[in-house]
Length: 346
Image (cartoon, rainbow, N blue to C red):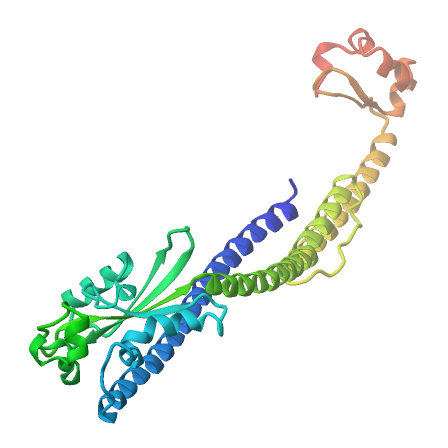
């Protein structure tokens, strides 16, 4: 694998890991924002329901309407489950709400398992004002449960205080939910919201962010690839080609001006090439001078390589021995026949 590919692979992996972490953080943030928005919506619904419950309760009592089996349904606390059932005709989100208790007078307001957990929580933590948790429904779907405690207030004691003090319609209709004291937990306002709305919203936002993230990743990677090719691999390739040409004897080869730190390397390479070229020319000139001197000598000059092969003989050798340089190169053993051992030197 080339250096360029190694660098691109490493950078791509780093960018991918960074983008993955960013996407994960954005997903978690988007999920949290969606939950906060859902909680805010539950708070708004709760405010409307509690305001309606209190105002209509007081209005019913202050109006002097006789509390009977027929009129008791006007009380919001008794009508809440019917209001929730009708709410589905106006809102298709699957949201439901109700006043529930572990000791209800209306069977429709009996707290279920998740609501019982909330009631127990508020009894153990009376300072808490709300509880917002996720749970899984019976069919396996995810939901969120918002609960707010309903504490006994002074006006509540009219129906939930001593049984003897309760209105006749209440006494005749119910035998339970009496003898509460001021500040006791009567039940909770329970709001259940399907999590599908959050999941759809978060998924859409995630897909959108992922698309932009992948696009940005490819743009960054392509930009880095261009930068590496322009400022790293291309200069290295130019240097490699220059070294190869110098290695093959082309000492006059020069490298074009490069960018950044490679400019210094290129200039150093060119100076080295120029110095080698000068040294080569000087060596050639010296060799030529020496060759001229040797060729013109009357002495017998011959050179033998360390491995014993014939390398050179001066023109005077042929005149003195009768053997040409080619014959001596082909038959080096002739040297032993015509030169005394004491006269040899290497």
